[in-house]
Length: 298
Image 1 (tube, rainbow, N blue to C red):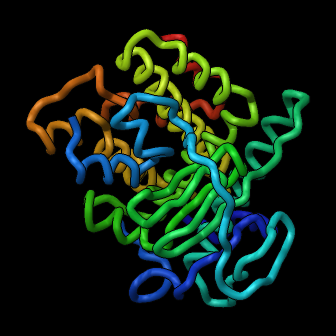
Image 2 (image 1 turned 45 degrees about the horizontal axis):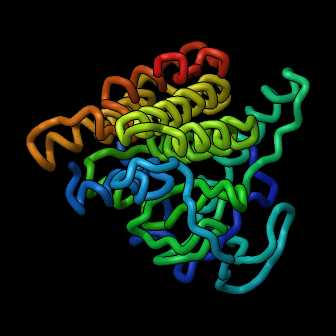
Image 3 (image 1 turned 90 degrees about the horizontal axis):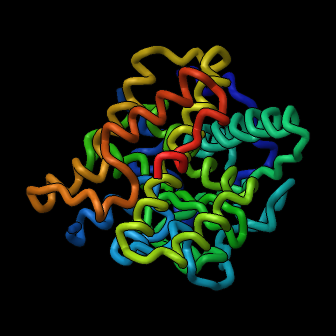
């Protein structure tokens, strides 16, 4: 994947890291549920770890302000934080992935006669506060609808390599595109409707099914993004396999089998490995968000 061909976000990345990027410097590019598994699920595409144990809404329900650290240098779409300097490959990578998602979804919304408001992506280290409450490295990447921001700890990519054996630049990009997919759901009003449906659900299993549909649609939206940038970013089949391998590794059935030795489908909150791969590939092959109706299968 030639991600350096992708457009910059133009200031959409807010850098609140206390330290300087990933261990070793630069971007590491490489080719029920117990406490550990809860952390892993939350780390990979989770919005709120409590939704895993409680079967509640897939968006964070906490409230709170945001504390920014580091030197202040504001730019378009930013209210503070450190703007990364030259040579920060982690920042450059995230900035260009976000910039490309902005470009793709702005174009799709425009064709539909709508206006897309891009999210801000905050890079942080160790901990931060979002409009949805506090977060730490263990929370993993998440989207907060309250402040319309994506949060990403800088240690995430190396954790991805170590803990689930997955990695590669397109796999990392898939994670970011998935979280942006939740922002798209928020922009379209889908998130609010599903939250209300979950609150009215009669059983935990029913609420979980809504959560699964939300996550699978975000996977499909990530695939749509991949389809639209495949030529510019020179995405290869090997790149696609990186994302597929990641989706397989973080399916609920795979994680449950590893943690408890058995699978409990009613407790799924993100979807099986097969479902995650299938919906990502549907979006990637067709590039049409209208094919991402995961809710019709509820």
